[in-house]
Image 1 (cartoon, rainbow, N blue to C red):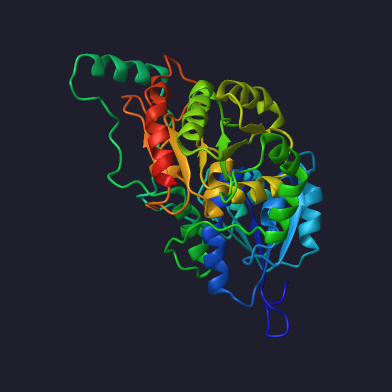
Image 2 (spheres, rainbow, N blue to C red):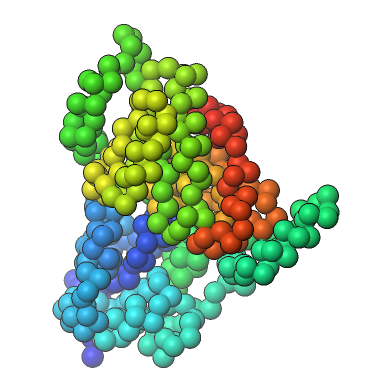
Amino acid sequence: MKKPPTASSPRRILVRGVNWLGDAVMTTPALQRLRAALPDAHITLLTHQKLADLWQHHPSLDAIITFAPSEGLRSVARRLRAGDYHSALVLPNSPRSALEVWLAGIPQRIGYHRRWRNWLLTRIVVPRPDQGRMPKRSVSEVNRLIRASAGSPQPATRSSPASPLHQIHEYLHLATALGANPEPLPPRLEISAAETAQAEAALLSDWRNEAGGSAPGQPCRLLGLNPGAEYGPAKRWPADRFAAVARAVSQQLGNCRWLAFGSASEWRICDEIAQRAGGGVLNLAGKTSLRQLMALLKLCRVVVTNDTGPMHVAAALGIPVVVPFGSTSPELTGPGLPGDSRHRLLKSAAPCSPCFRRTCPIDFRCMTSISAERVIEAVLQAL
């Protein structure tokens, strides 16, 4: 049997992290509260290898363990067993994440109540009744709401909690099982000035020179665009509108440059935006590591982005974001701490929004109803 921690042997806690970038950022308030509650504990995060760089220098953590998508359960558990952990806080709701810590023999295993895995946990946490999750709308429900709104001056909407809880509360509530304070904090990430300078020198210096630099006495503003969304096309505001925003803001402000971020698969959409914007946009899709992405987002004065991982990263680095929301809900997964006045979250008036679907089954009216002019105004306000 594992011995309890002593003064000479601090409590060793494993946190099983979530696997998506945006969700990972939303867990940082829980990690901060956990560190505050257990300042002497040794806290290790188990995370997917694609997210390892996100956690560099994070003050809430003492160590990071990564796993590859192809790594088997027993291999992960064997490495965890060597860590001699006293407790495991399982943030994902999957059976696999609970099975990992069970196979590792960690004595205290804490996670949310979910089918197929409760027997693997020693402490089952029941979700708060006001936890604001909304199910995906069916195609028939979307069509019914559209038909109902066509004959009514008031849009038909889904009945929902008056104040749905943001997803950061889900992780905070789980951390209270280890004594953490449930009061929310802004999500937090760390990037050093040296990393920012290195990323700027590696990726922007030649482009800045080719673009003509900045006017004498006027520092060039860097602004960001993030037109992709890994979850699916229903989250993606149209590319031509991103381009219209870049073009109009550049004309009004002058002396600014845009950085277009995305994965390698989003290179084409970023290239389209750069072409349509008529210059002043650097396509960085597929060219940055996660750490470089963080550094370059930190350089931006504002980022126009869909509801996706880099949106959360920018906000956690203190950068204002402007976000068109159509298929998803800013109340549930908005950037930063809910109510942060630095950000501009633009909601659709479509009666079927939010539907939480990956693809739109009708005419994409939630996103096309958010005009470029509305986003341009929001960018200028944020600046």
